Amino acid sequence: MITIALSKGRVAKAFLEKLRNQGVHIEPGSEKSLQFYDLSMQLKFILVKADDVPTYVQTAVAELGVVGSDILKEHEFDGYELLDLEIGSCKLCLAGPVTHAYYDKTWVTVASKYPKTTELFLRNSGKLGTVIKLNGSVELGPVVGISDVIVDLVETGRTLRDNNLIVIEEIEDVSTRLISNPVAYKTKSKAIHLLMDQLKNIEKENINAQQIH
Amino acid sequence: MLNLNANEFTLTNHIFEILEKKAISYGYEAVFTETFGKYNDKMDSDAVKIMAPSGDLLSLKSDPTPHATKQIAPLCDGYLKTYYKSSLVKLDPKAPIGIKETLQGGFEYYGNSNIESDAEIILLNCSVLSTLGVQNIHLDIGHIKFTEALLKSLNFSEDALIDVENALKKRSLKSNIDLNPHQRSTLETLLSLSGSPVEVIKNARSLATTPDLIDSLDQIENIILRIQDLDIDQITSNKISVDLCLTHPKSYYTGPLFKIYSVDTGKTVAQGGRYDNLSKQFGYSFAACGGAIDIKNTIEVIKMKNTMTIDRTNFVLVYDEASFKPALDLTNWLRAKGFSVKFNTRPTDYSTALQSDYFKSVNQILDFNDGFIKVIDQMKNETYRISLEAFKTRLTSNPGSISIH
Picture 1 (cartoon, one colour):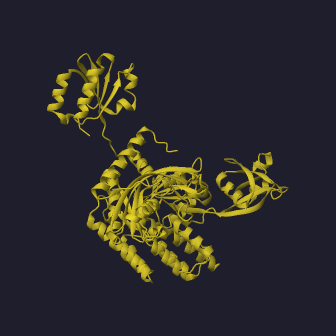
Picture 2 (cartoon, each protein chain N blue to C red):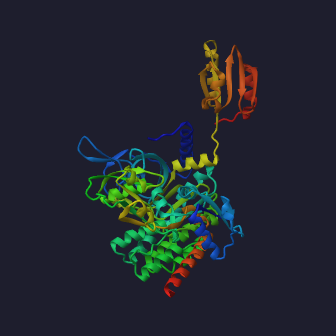
Picture 3 (tube, helix red, strand yellow):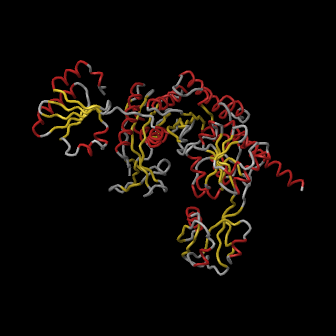
């Protein structure tokens, strides 16, 4: 049996849908409980907070995990990122008010849920600054004056617009990844590759569908 | 920096004891490597650098292998087998002060280019782990030359090579890496290799288009056959995998590599490989392979799985001023018989004292008083009073009632 740690919410829903479309029988509504199985009892799913997925995988409690690449980078996950599941694709961006003076300031204050990623970004940009960790509503940072700018995920850009913020720089693409503990990858390689093949089939079908259209 | 609490200190010593016993039983000799060495920019990239009073740049030992190789090189005129127990200091940006101190114990086998030496190093590491009670281990074998030769044959640009190396580390090839169709399909084949060692090697042969690549696969195959012949504890066929993307952070490795994992915890508990070219850095030329136990991870596995029991101290003998001399005589008598004994003044508050690890970790507390001994037997959970002579007679006639270390 393979245990898969899933980020609760949209990611888990989309991932389970992908598996169901590939013929994996998971009872509808199973995801209401925190732990459930597919019908063949080959897969066990545990629903956890996104931030905790890398921990469950690194400690070998789960052989696989489904989580955003933003979390992996912040967590400094050093296991395997087996597949880009193309769920929840968005961008990690530096954003700020229309009147921002980011490039002119010698020292900036940046609010973010991702302090390590943000510090790395500043370092790589050669920019000096302070990073303020916020756990949510990051867009409020420049609005209430706790920061000059923010680093946050941007999907449609609506939340930024609603708070009179604009994208200053795109930092990187973010999407959901299938991750594995290296030990599990070696000891359960057949089962993991079978699952990967099923998921890759979905991607091939999507590409073919896009090409047709 | 090395923050070992009392229990971890005991565990560490125990691990080193087992390692040393195994090493000696296989004919390995102890080597003690210097703490400082002249800074070498190829080998000391993660070392703490220190300026000597002479103005020379020195490095604190971050890796025992080059130090040991340099030290034994003048002595290596055939086969030479050594073991070490070492504290290492490395630069680590994730560590609280940017410096990490670790403990490592390992084995080095010099002068032997035959795969029998690679297999022996693997055997030793597995044997130490099994003796320590680390269960459910898994052996992973790779070959640095296979990976390097394959990448070289694909002629990547410098930028693409960095992306490719990261991709192999993460086991995932991103679509935005600039690769031609042959490069991409070769790498995808490499990343898809899975299954039993036999299957992986068989499928990898489709990639082995040069003598180096073929030779590497042959070596891995022969090491596995040798390991199976050696019948290493816990390492059955389904506990071995071949990983042709396996790499090592140290650049001096030249041949087969191995890692041993604790399956239950996902931790690497030992690793090593062959490094035939390292001696050339010091003006010599001889084959070499080695492997080391990761002490920190092994301790964590032992504690998490609670698999190791360490022999308890036999007695703590407590006395007061009046009973000091006869209590001391009894202590010396017990020690001469091979028992381990702690010797302390009677605690004023027994119940508090008995909560401490110092007292909890002994089999029996002997409270010497007025020619009699009050015995608190913590193993059998009983307390009784006995004369000194009766105590000695009982112990002499039935020494097995308390195990000697």
